[in-house]
Amino acid sequence: MTKQEMIDALMLEDFSPVYHEADRIRKEVKGDDVFVRSIIEFSNYCNRQCKYCGINCFNQNVKRYRMPLSEIVDTAAQAIAAGYRTIVLQSGEDPYFNGDNAKRLGEVVSAIRALPTAYEPEPDGSKPILDITMSTGELPYEALAHLRECGATRYLLRHETSDPELYAFLHPCGTLEERISCLRNIKKLGYATGSGFMVGLPGQTLSSIADDVILLETLECDMAGIGPFISSPDTPLEGYPNGETELTKRAVALCRIHRPELNLPVTTALGVLNPKEREDAFSCGANVIMKKVTPTKYKEAYSIYPSTIEETRIMEDRQNLDKMIRSLGRRPV
Ligand code: 5AD
Image (cartoon, rainbow, N blue to C red):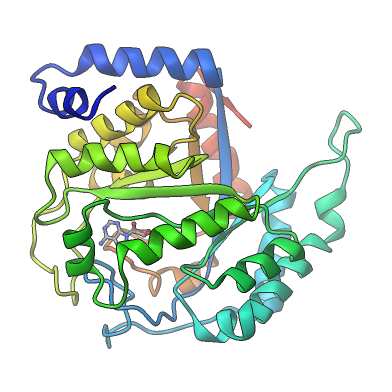
């Protein structure tokens, strides 16, 4: 699709033919499999000042925590035992873990790689493949290379918005150019590369959402997380209107049509605004879901946006997730 075609599509009164096309392409290219990932939010310390984010460094009302190495590894082991084959390690840009070219982060990755459970054979006798996905912010090339050597296979770093001025307004401590350069390094190092953006940011235009979709193509992304902006208390964007779930799903559908091979999650933020929307997004082109396995005691402190806190029961949660996916006629993988 051309940029203008995308803008026109985003404005359609009745988008249902586009949803159908996105769903058809999803089925043709990805089948009915839904990839299920577990996510551990292991630290909420952050150096950055992102205006939308509830854990930005200026928010004094956040109780900061860092999970000890042993607890991160134990949580990963439980996730593997519950059937997950992807562990997403997410944190703020935490100088403790990211220092010395991410030495401590590397220790976490290596320790998870060394888990005996990571190599228990699957029921059919094959060796399971464990993917470790980093979602730990912008890092220098050497740090990214080190993590790759330790065994990390994927990296998530949303570009957030492709509009350079809006990006600069939202991020007093970084530029879109730096973000893109980091994403290029991630790609160059052979990570499966995930970017993505928020929908409904203050001042965002439909034209810049079309540019967001095009940027995913330019960066040769393998995955893209697209979620609505949710206004967070104690941030400079407190009180701004939330992004629309309908526009978010439209953006997901356009991504599926524009880049059929992308892995597209139904994002948590979509479910926060309306739980039904998260399931709905599976018929708009999405084929991935992430589930938090973060221990319950840390969850409240990892509020990048407001949401209800659910108790973590790793095994039970996974079973319920599989059930939900099957109820949609899809297959959890
Ligand atoms: N609303 C929606 N998404 C947010 N993120 C951070 N803060 C918010 C918010 N207030 C998203 C960003 C970030 C990802 C981890 O969470 O896109 O990359």
